[in-house]
Image (cartoon, rainbow, N blue to C red; front, side, top):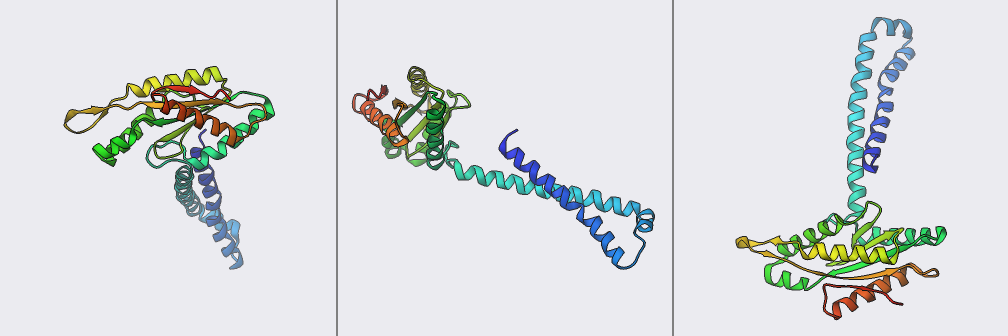
Length: 240
């Protein structure tokens, strides 16, 4: 069950519980008015049943709606509005959690950071709307090459990070190469039936035994810039 669905069901259930207050509350009022409540129930059972069913449906629907909006708010707080990927804040929190888990359970953890090559040229030549299309297309292509346990986030304008739990350096390299190859084949349509393509440069680093989040990120970032400075459209692995 997804977190959003769970929140909707919880709020709908709470609404159903609150709905019991309508018939019970009216019975309590009648009691204080010195009516015989059992006779009241016997004589007006249909009314009370109608009240119970009606308020239950109304409050449950309202609770579902509230839960839906809460789920949307939670998602907006951790997602990038353009690409739909996780944002920097979520990534930083998740990175800290995965590094701690990796050390505690002695399991491998790897990180990929990649950048779109010559992205500024796209904005300069075609405008920001086309630049946004490029960001979305490349984000979708990269995400489609990842497992559900792997986390991809937009951490800068055209910079992205991929967190790979339970992933050795060798597997991280394979994943990076697969993303690089897939992105290079993406064609983004623009005006007059033309298309543009873009490549990415990637840096890969795997967590050392006594390393922290900042060090892991810095090594992957350094590898990324080595890839960009040595020709772009390639994967460089941190050797430190």
